[in-house]
Image 1 (spheres, rainbow, N blue to C red):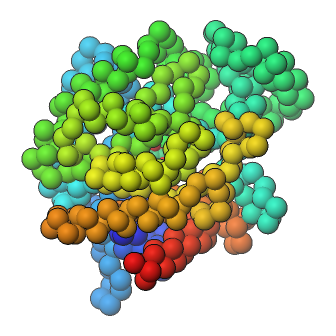
Image 2 (cartoon, rainbow, N blue to C red; image 1 turned 45 degrees about the vertical axis):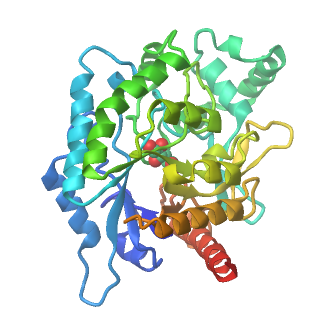
Length: 399
Ligand code: DNO
C-alpha cells in the first residue's frame, strides 16, 4: 500500500511540512488554479511538483504520485460541438503529467456537481464534526430553494409535504447555508462556484439527457484518452458519483458494480481503471464493498478509504463515520487490496502497490477552531490514516 495524502496546494491550511509528519509517502494533488478545459503546462506541473518534492537534507521525501483530478470540461459531458478541443487539452495535460513522472490520474464524469453534502459541520456525540448528506434537506433545496422545474416528479407526496414543512421552519440564514454547502461549499470541486441562476442554467443544459447518452459521451472521451494513456503507462481512475445516484434531474453513471461492468465491457483497456472510493460506493446499501474490491481488483489504481453510516429510516441519508466503524467493511476492503497487491507482485508488475489515502476526516481537537477544508482537516485524517495503517499491519502479520 502506498499511503498518500491529498494536498490542495499552497493555500491548503495543512502544509507539506505537516504532511511529512504523518509519515505518508505520496501526495495526491492537482493544479486547482487552472480553469477547467485548459492545458496544464509542463512548467506549472514542475513548479507544483517542486513545492511537494523539495526537502531539506535528511527530511523524509514526499512524491507527487496521483492527480486528483484533471477536470473534465462540461462540454465534453454534453458532447457539445467543439468539445474535441477540450478532449485534446485533457490529453495534453495527461501527456505533460506523464513527462513529469506522474502517472495515476483520478477524474470523474459527474455532470454539473461534483461531490455533494448538505451539512459540513454535523456534530458528533464526541464533540467533533463530520460531513453529512441529509436527503430531506436536499429535497428542500431542490424543491423550494432551487425550485427546479419538474422536481416534484422525483419525490413522493409525503416527501414533498415534509420538505415544505422543513423549508418553512428554516431561517433565511439556514437556507443560505444549505445553498452554499450544496453548490459551492466543498474543496476540490471540479466546477466553479456559482449562484443559483447560473446553477439553474447549467442544469438546464442537461435537460432530457439520459444515462445512455451520458455514457456514450464518456466513451467518446475515453476512446481518445485511453490509447494515449496506454502508450504513456498512465493509469486512469474514475471516481464514483457521490452520492451514487441520479440527482437534480441529472443522470449519474458510475454508481454501482453494474455500472462498472458496463464500462469495462465496452472499454477493456488496462489503462481504464477506478478510484475505489469506499465511502461513496458504500453510501448505497446494495454496494458490497469487499466484493467490489475483489471483483474489480485489477482495475483499482487508487482507493479512498473511509466509511459512512446511513440513517436507519432513510438509507439515502448518511454521515461520514470514523474510518473503521461504519456501514462499510473497511477491513474487508483493505484485505482485498492487499491480496491484489500480492497478485500483482507475483505477476512481476512494475507497480504492484496501490495508492490509498485516508479520505475525509472528522474535525476534532485543535482543528475545531481552525479554518479547514471541509473533510480535509489534518488531525481527523491522521486518525483515519493511523487506523488504516493498523489494519494493514495486522493483516500483513496474519498473512
Ligand atoms: C471529495 C473527492 C472528490 C473527488 C472527485 C474526483 O472528497 O473525493 O472531489 O476528488 O470527484 O474527480
